[in-house]
Image 1 (cartoon, rainbow, N blue to C red):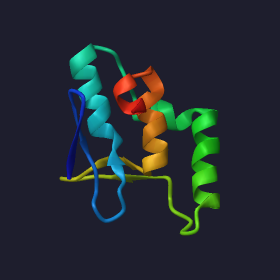
Image 2 (spheres, rainbow, N blue to C red):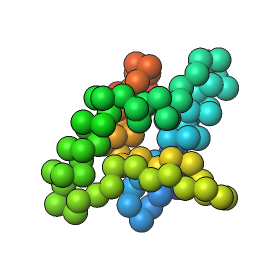
Image 3 (spheres, rainbow, N blue to C red):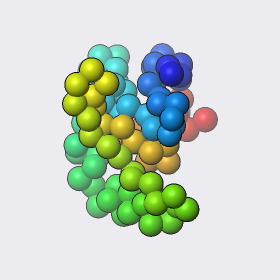
Image 4 (cartoon, rainbow, N blue to C red):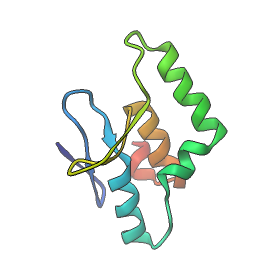
Length: 96
């Protein structure tokens, strides 16, 4: 499913609510000219800590993010982690 958030179109999977962070980063670059890299975000200590908390503290032991190739490829993030990623550059649209 596609969710409109401000000027961005955010792709979300219906089966588990994971979001495509790769597509959001691409749209961010195209609209602002600023680089927003998913890999850089995943390397942050704060992201690793948050991802670990998601995996260990949820009842379903969900994987915080998945990397896929192909037609529906990219990095897909758990909704909690995705919110942190989207707010990385303090875009108020994603804080609401």
